[in-house]
Length: 147
Image: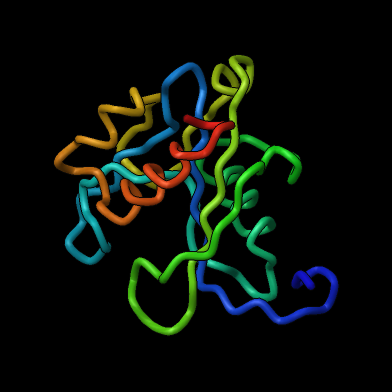
């Protein structure tokens, strides 16, 4: 049963890997000491607000961070992971594919220094990629639809 169907889902936030032609949608976090992972390469997503479902959380963040309004059916992979911040709540990780016209339509928001469609392998080996997200992307790449 999902949260939308009335079930309880205890999660702190949602992140996603969006792929296109061997590249991954990434952004460079702000370089502020009060933020977790300052000046590191991150993926779209963020913290839950109110009673959002994981899908609602991720899609809201995509709109806020990149100006993209994607339908829920574009999220083709979902898995619960331990929270990146620690604590008892899980984080939900999604994956999907972007289309060229969606990438062209990106309007970067106010969080972060810049964004790029980074070569997936470059993200996986980047010394400033958030390690927990590297592990999640590696798990996704082992699946037939993404590898």
